[in-house]
Length: 595
Image (cartoon, rainbow, N blue to C red; front, top):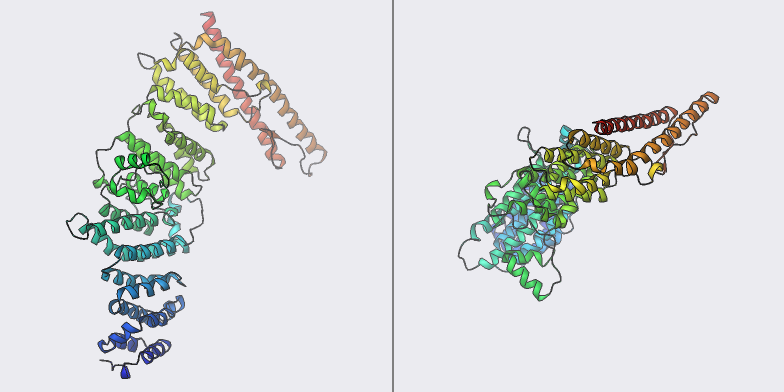
C-alpha cells in the first residue's frame, strides 16, 4: 500500500500527483489515488486534481503514452466516486464543455456517468446539463463531404476520417447513456415515489436520443439489405432506436408532430390537451425535438424495419401514410444525397404498404401531399445521382396510383399547373396514358375520364405557350408524350366511349395546326444553323465556332463544333418524330372519317 502524503498536506498531494504525471509514472499515480488514506485529500482538492489530470487528456498523450492517459482516466473516475457528487459534476462539466480533443471528451464521459448515477438531488437538471453538453459537442463534429456515391460505392464512406470520427464518438456516448435508459425503462412503469422524476428523465432522454439521431448521423449511410455487413453508423442508429423503443410508450407518438407550439391561445391549449397524450406536452411547448430527427426515426422504422414488434395496430393506415410522406418530404428537401435517399426509401416503403385506389380524393386537401409531390418531382430532375432519380420516378408513379379515380384526376389536373420541366411533364403524360388505359378496360368508364373532364385534362398537357413560335426543342419531351397520348386515345376508343372524337376539331385548331407550323419554322431555323456551321468550318477549319444556339430563351454555353452539330441533329430528329406522330394521328382521323 502506498504511504499517505505527509501530514495529509493537500497542496503537497496535488504537487506530487502533478510531478508523477509529468514524469509518466502511471503506476505510482494509480497507487496514491486509490490509497484510502488519501481519500479526504482527494475529496477536498478534487477541483484542482481534475484540472491537473485533464491537462494530459490530449491526443498526443493518447497516441504516445496510453498508460499515462489511462492513469488520468483512473484519477477522474476515483474523484467521481470519492468527491461530493454535486461538486464533482460541476468540475467535470467545466472540462467537458471545452474539450481540446475527442479523447478528452470521451475520457470525461465515464466519470460524469458515475457522478450522475450517485446523485440524490436535482437529478433531472444535472442530467439535462450533461445531455445538452454531449448533444452540442456531437452536433459540432464536421460532416463528411457529399460524394454522390451509388450502390456499393457507399461502403467507401467508412474509410472517410470524418465518418470514422463520428462512428467512434457515437460508440462512446452509447456507453454513457445506456445505464440511464435501463433505469428509466425499468422504473417508468412501476409505482414508485420518484415516478415524476423518472418521467422527466424519460422525456430528457427521448429528446436527447432524437437529437443525436439527427446531425451528424443523418449524413451517414444507414441502409442495410440483410446481405452485407452493417456499417458502424447503422449499428449506432439501431442502438439509439432500440433505446427509444424501451422508453417511449408509443413509438409512433411523434408521427404527426410538426414542430413546437410556442404561442397559442387558451382554446388551442385546450385542444392540444384533448388531442395529445400528456407526455407530449414537454415536447410541443418547446423546441425539444428536431423535425429531421423524427424523419430519420420513421425512416429506420418503416424503411429499415426496426421496432416492428412495437408498432401499434390501431393507427389508420392512411394517417400513417400521410404522416410518413410529410417526414419523407423533410428528408427530400435536403440536397445531400445520403439524406435525400432516406426520404425516397421511407416514401417507397409506406407507399408499397397501401393497395392502389386506397386513398380518397378528399385527402388531397391536406398540404402534405402537395409538399411531397413538389420535392419528389424536384428530386426526379435535379438529384445528382442517377439511381435516386430513377427511384424517385418509380415512387412518383406508385404514389399517383394510390388514389381513387377522382383523386388521380385531380392530381393530374394540378400537376399540369405546377410542374414546368418538360421531361417531367412528358413522364406525367405517359402515366396519364397508363391511367386512361386502366379506366377504359373497366366496364363502366368513370365520368372523370370521359367527355369534357377528359378533354380539359388532355388539353392542359397539349400546350404550346407561344403557339407556332414556341421553342419545340425545349418542349420536345412533353409534345412527343402528348401526341402519343392522343394517338393512343384515337386508336383504342373507336366507339368514342371517352367522347374524345367529339373534340378533334378543337385539337386540330388549338394544337395540331400550330404545331405543324412550328415544326416548319423550327426545322428551317436549325437547318440554317447547320448550314452556318458547315460554311464556318469550310472557311476556317481550325477556328473556334461562333455560331450560337438558343434553347428556352437561353443561349447555350460555348461548345465545340462537333457538339453543336450533334445538338442540331438531335433537334431535327425530335422534329421528325413529332411529324411522324402527327401523321399517324392524321391517319387515324382520316380512317374514322372514311369509315
